[in-house]
Length: 118
Length: 108
Image 1: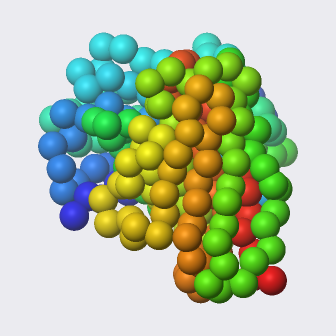
Image 2: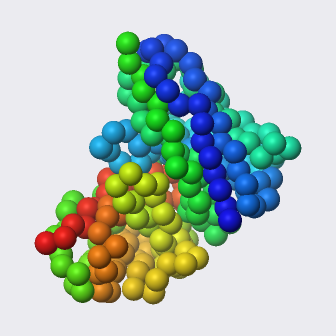
């Protein structure tokens, strides 16, 4: 069974940093691209970042480019999202998701809540 | 950026009804690189459809997707009680990947 378990969320002050982790199991982690998607309270879904299988290529929308860094450790089946210079509008549940070979995000974690507030 | 606009915002229907959800893209989504997700309160989204019309593993055949170019549709042939939720479309043709704002299917 595919499992994705996120951790690292919490309360952080504006301008602060946080690192999220996502531990994968039940599939060959190194064979799949991975992504983070977030959802602000009561709002819709927003793609935050994606990473190639090898970790050599990463992708970000303009809203987080230069502030967030996505990486992976295939030996540990773990995905990392380093978030710096956090702002109030980064407050959201952050989901780790597997990128399906045929398209779409075919497995999701349960999410971890990040709250940016003073 | 490809903007996806979903309509209607809310659909009020009864179990057994047919639901038709629309997703319109601001630019053509080539090769049908469009997915649909279902999200229930307090849960992560679940992939229903990819490639505009292919059901994901384990998805009942009452869910179907269609469309191409800029106009896509998710149809639920007969609503079951567990189908009431929010549905999102998403394009993976171009970066940044984008989602529609969602359609809520609620019990009438």
